[in-house]
Length: 464
Image (cartoon, rainbow, N blue to C red):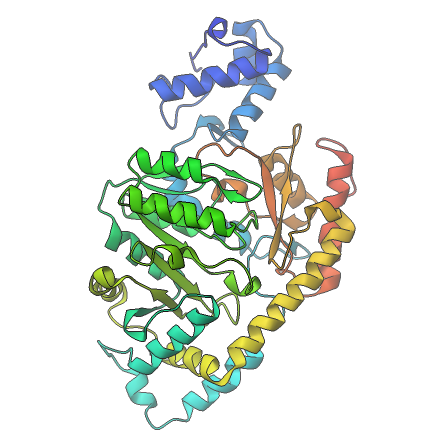
């Protein structure tokens, strides 16, 4: 039996909130260590002279804040932030890609349709018939030539990032580039920052390299510059951001905020890692952060969402002072790059199929968002194209309970904890509208979610 007993006299407000506040305070002071098993609802209720329902509600509130996590059959435990960050990507992938018969997958952030096979397939066939195929398939310690960097510069220019080919690095996808950027711009133990809800792959990369991540508060417009200032002032050496169509909230930073954040990076001698993974969805949006402080920003772009996830090719615009170190990090991570795939990506850019694919993906995303707005409400629709929408939740719903209830009714959603750093200011779930194979499957999943929202937690609803 756990012997933790909080002093509620030090915390005002409703009893359930006072218990949650006490949990938060004891974690901050070290009184509750990561992995500590909390008392059962009944035991704590008896010792505090409150109802079991009050303790249950307090634990739900603490879970919403990211302080506790419940494990079926084992109990409720104090969360371990380091383990959470390290496991963010594996846990997301385990849920998002777990095959479930008759389940609607709204968890995966991927292109709709045939995953770009119409464009990639013919180009790979051509490469397969080339006389230099053995050389492309062999070990090559310097596989990236000027034409590859030129193709990367051409694609970056479409995203309003003007850079000479000599400052373009080619990587095997943006995840590799994220790890390389962290290794280049920071040292083990350095603090880094990101949106309070962010890409799980960044959290896992930072944990792998021993870079603690601090959350930066957001509003409906994205990162708040004053909060970025606070993070830099605390010692964060780098800010990671998806400034355009943010993952998972879909917010896009204004030009004014981008300019302010760039100035803050200069003022604090810090850096920005700008992930342009969704830039193709808003090609006419504000200039990249890189434009405002090119010496402080590494900008990443990839074809994984615009063309095909299997086309493991990404391009990074790297400041001249850090280019050699960044390329060395790429070499240490992979020795050699997947040259046939990079060659295919460059052909698709040079010949225009990549542009057509990106335009198609943007149009398809708009159609699917229209369908989602009809079913879930127009107020949830992002202002432009996006692969997902953000569904805000208010008590008694929590992201944990909603994801679990959706799964029980046959809809797979990504766990919000995968995106969260610490305690986000708002709760919700990401609904990936491009994940289902067709519109009919998407509609079925959306109607199930609408039914859950209408019924509320704990109310009976027919399962599928």
